[in-house]
Structure formats: C-alpha cells, structure tokens
Length: 365
Image (cartoon, rainbow, N blue to C red; front, side, top):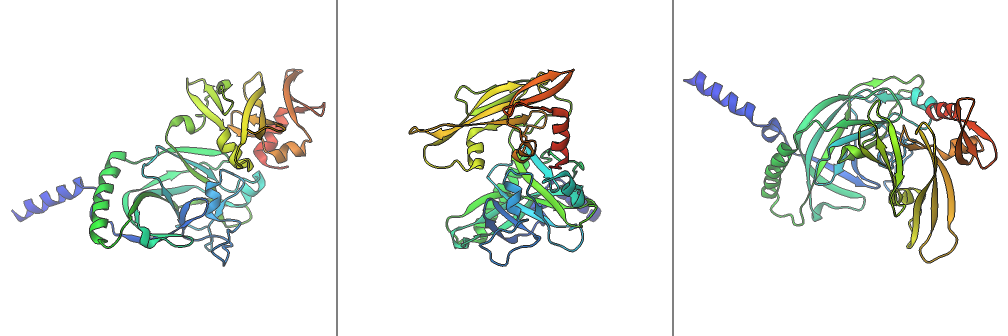
C-alpha cells in the first residue's frame, strides 16, 4: 500500500509544472533606462548609476547591431545573464543579433554566443518598491530553462518561443495570488513577464575573451521576424500615406521593412509636428536592392529635406550611411552593365553592387 501511495504521489507531481512547486522568489533590482533589465555583469560599467557605459545592456534594445552588451566577468562569461522585463504577454518570436557587429573584424575578434538558455519568470513590484533609477521586484520561475543555439554569423536570427503560452498564463495567475497573499501591505501592485537569457557556451574570439551580443527583441507575428532561408523578395510597396514599407515574398508573406514612426525616432526627429515619409525611387531587377527616398519636414510648413538611402532587401537592412560615405556615393537608381548590376549615383558614377555587398558583410569601411 505504501509503495502504491508513493507511486501515485510521484505521478501527480509529474503532472504539475515543476516551477509551480519548487520555484522560490528571487529579489531583483531592475534598471529603467532605454529598457527594463538587470544583468549579472557589464564590461567597463560606470561608477555613477546615472551614466550609461559603452557596453551597457541598453545596447540590447537600441535596434542598432553596431552596439553590444558585453559581460564583465573574467574569461568568456559562461553563466552570465540578462533579465529583460517584458509586457504582460509573451510574444511568439525571439530575435537575436549575435556578437559585436560594428564590423566583421570586431565580430570575429570578440566572443560570440553559441549555446544559450532562456527562461520565463513572473515579476511583481509595487509603488513602495520604486526608486530613482528603477524598481525592486520579486520574480518567480514559470517555464524553462530551454537550450537554444545561435549560428556564428552576423545579422538577425529568429527563434520561436519554446513555451506553452496557456500554461504560462495559468502559472502566472497562481503566482499573482501567492504574491498578494504574501504582501498584504503593498498597494499599486504591478505584474510583468521576465525573460532570462543566459550564456552557456561561446564561439571564441581571435583576440579578446569578452562575449558580446548586439540585440535582443521580440515579435508577435512571423511577418515581423524577417525572411526565411531561401525566401525571395517578389515585390516592394509603400503604404498610401508613405509611412510604411512592405515586402511581398515568394512564400506569400508580407513583411514590414520600415516604419516611419520608428525610423523618425532613430533619426532624432521627435519634435512636435515633425514628420518622415517614404517614397520608392528604384528597385533592382533582381529585387535584392532598393533606393528609398525619405522626406523629412514639419506639418506647419517650411522646407522638406529629401534623403536617398540604399536598402538591402535580402538582409532587410539599410546600407549603413558610413559605408555609402566611404564610397562617396549617393544612391539614385540601378543599371546593368555587361550582365553585372551597378548602382547609379548622383555623383555620376557607378558602384558594383557585388563589391558593396561584400563590404557590407565584412564591415571593413
């Protein structure tokens, strides 16, 4: 009978998610500066908490692959982690920019993440726990850890979240009731989800033993997550109001290439009445490149400034302005000369796009 009862209890325990039984609260201070985060370490971290260092975790959220969070441990930083505060819903896709992508040379000289673990936590804080630079919260493990592997390559990589969304919501409700019961004195309780990203192994750098990751972001639909391997661009179009650029693909998907609201913020166009719109100047015959004009001005009138920019549609990225400056080239249109594709420029010269593509990949400019 005793053996039977023990067996029955074991079966019941297996049916209940481990996080709901064994997980313990952890108290964490989250910084709020360009994102909501806590990290295990940071290279060259400033002594003044008001300052942001060159390798701050803020770099994970700035949508710029040329900046990176760099762990500050001795050695490759195995076990280093970042906790990212998210909204109240778990999005479907995790998007990662590996390494230090300022150039191909720097990418290879520093460590890049190979294997990593992700876990999802419920986080709870209140008005009583807020401070000048962020807030203190209690977090509780809901799901994970799950082991995933990054490719050793520049560019953005996409992963589908390996968690049961329904199970997370059920556990989260239970955790919320538990938190309120244990903190009856707190008012204004705020709950949120937390993703933990932990470094497990690395691709070794040729010069430095610092491990870098350029970006972590989330997408709630596949259309925001980029092209699949082998997927081709069929068409590029701009919304009627000129505020968004879309790509139609060979897999009958529509992807958002650019949003004027986000681009304006990145360019620093944030004053009242300041606007940005797009128009298409030319798309290459192979549908791998586009010249897109940006119109920047103010709704109350005045001069509208037009800037032409070159985009790599396969990478879904704008060609860096620094690279175009190195070529002393302002993009205008495309032409084929002797079966090779060239960019025509306002400087009345042509640029072989094969060469420009290699330089964009290598970062050597």
